[in-house]
Length: 622
Image 1 (cartoon, rainbow, N blue to C red):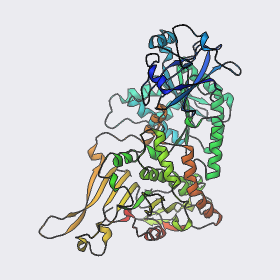
Image 2: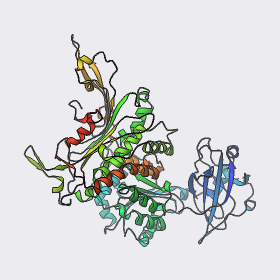
Image 3: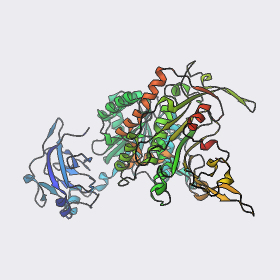
Image 4: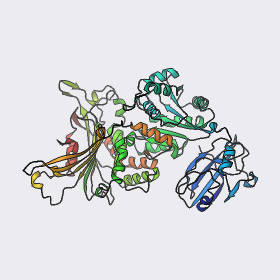
């Protein structure tokens, strides 16, 4: 938790700009500076720099230098006025910093604060700078679970393999299971792979990585066990500047217990502490808000990294680049040219023995409320002021707040049943022994959403998500309007949809971007064909596409929040789906059954037809 502040002083922006020679570093519009403010009677302190009375970022000491307060790496975006608050830390309580008049000579006063030149800064740091080098300690809470074994540890190894992790880092697994360091390394080693395009020194790299992995067994709600973890982390940190990242790969009902214990007993005393939280973030607006309140008892919002791994996928991250850096697309990105947008998620397998977990959430909570809605917000947002995380997330929130809550008449739900295909019998959802008999939980849902703003008024955004379908795919399909007065409409007969241009962004598998255009078939006649202008990533780029968890873990380590979900963004998302979910459960609405391996229930096609739309993934030339 942040320390209380004392001796806050207002500092005009122009004063900061004029003190460049006295600060360690500073640049207009964003940068860093080092400041010294008076003396502390104790040996530890913290500082906060804030623009216009609004907290920007907490920073802490590089080291607890005796009787000196230093602010470390404080970002300086443009702002008219700044406030620097300083607190000196004692064993119990907090006291105000002493008067600047008691500071050593040669420090020059700047608007009531004291600035250090680069030379003075080095004098304070001292010659043994290696002790001030930062280290990152990554603790995977729930290390014995499937997510940790299959995704998190392999992603961390991939980052190490690509030299993306800091020079000094340590990885700890934490769980209730009894396990030695050697047993953890054996477990982790079974899931590690090297890049296809870069296999040299693979075994050597694996061994080096595994030697950085350790294990600590403990209870999730035990502050004492986390205090023991803290001691082990300190041993590996070796007195360096300690930054700590906790990845909560655990069920959401124990998030708050872990955060409480880690915050009180194992957070960094002289660096940053961040926590990655996995979905689901509650079951509805109320439970989500309660979870957020619980987390914020022990963490600041900028310490919480709510992860949605779909935001880390290559084609989703490329979405804004495709739109904002290509002139051919941005003018078309509105109701004037776009007829509908389809967000499609399908899996060709069922719950596979995980029905107990899935039955508690269903496809709407599991896929639509987070993955697909996040993609929709990125797709539909206005141009952000900058690529700064807050500017992007602000625009996403505006999109979500411009949407009306889903109504039952705009939704179709389904549940897969048993089916025999090619001589193979596939079980139905309720045939899964982990699923309660007579369950009404949907394994398929389709929905029509609308954004009430000038850009998207009247354009249906159709979502579709399901399990045990014909194909596995995740894609965004943008269907453009018909060409007014099309000279060649006779060549397409009465089916003008065949003449519609369509932009397809295939997120997975076989990542690709392709545009469907009308083209003349070579020959003497006038025969038209719909062809693809195709960017297939596997053909164009030889480099293997990183897993989404790699990108998101690296962003969390670097403090980049652009691809993580803010609390108000989460609230707005739940407000759209909570009324629908409650109505489905209260009225016990039965889902339409569809065969395992089919294209889903007929209700989805009727829903699309209500808006004069055909699902693009069911077309013959999809």
